[in-house]
Image (cartoon, rainbow, N blue to C red):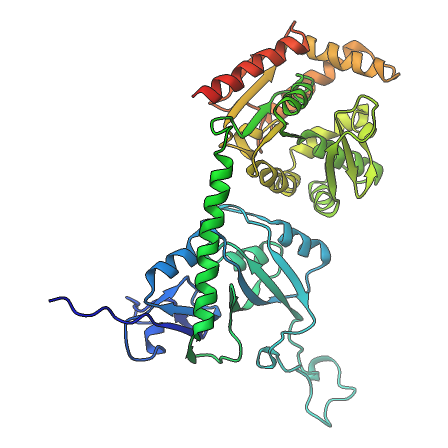
Length: 458
């Protein structure tokens, strides 16, 4: 005869630093089970590393635990983090937008610099001489001051191994203390290290509502994406060398499909143009990478009817017509080959692509930015054909141009882009090659339409 099922139990626990987030440790360390109340066997929902502390939910409700921890549902977790030094606004923005870790880019996060931690017990006492002592003391006799630290409030919707420590350490602010204070609607409150309390009925109900609402929302999004265009490729990557026509074809295709058109190359051109304008040497990798992280680049549909495909704004200023200047053409290769620049811009590009319904063009879309794109196209043409197009573009804008010089620049750019160490120009193994040499725009577009139709029929 089967025994009765154990009653569901929900406990909030403040895990102290030095404890494992588990009920067993083969190395004989301190475990959560030492802190939990007697009764049914409870299991932690999620993890905190040994050196971190704060709120943990422990329960025997496996269904709730699964829905709260599955990465698909992106439940919020809130942390207070003490770090070495004081991050500036630029670093806060990088954490907010996402940084590139060794296992891929992080999702956007809420990150705020606090004047002091909200809980008094987290505040360190200022070090210094005892009262009545030490005034005017200098040199070796003066008490040593501790390094300056600051507190961040970070809200994540993902949970990779030691993610916060890696995020803050990447930008030069190692974590000294990490305290989780919230999991969705559940708050740490006035719990102290090593103490626990039962959740109220209202807290359990709120957690279950959040968990199942996330499941329903995810299902609704999946259903919406699988509507009438179920088999239409949602992400289309078009790569190719300079002047291959990828921007023109990508823009026309996006307009026909009702998709977002996003030319990643203009972001690198914009960075190069700003570097030249501000006197930043394009061969100073660190300075150009810092510049790319500091400026805000916005790419929108054309706002002026002057033949442009898009409008490019840098910190609110229209720089669209600066991007095809000969000096920018020469500067864009070292800028786009800069790993720091590519990291700063790739994160934004990837998130735009992951939203779907986008035609993205560039030089490494199918290989780096969107390696799982539904359709990958590599658009190419003979160097002389591409030089002719670029030469005619410049004449149409009223600029002086020399065909042989344009051809030399095209070949130099091809060599540089295909041989650079980081994200070299190449066709993805599963990309379809389209050679546009001698073809009109309409003929190339017709071939690309056929590729979309073929992908839709698969």
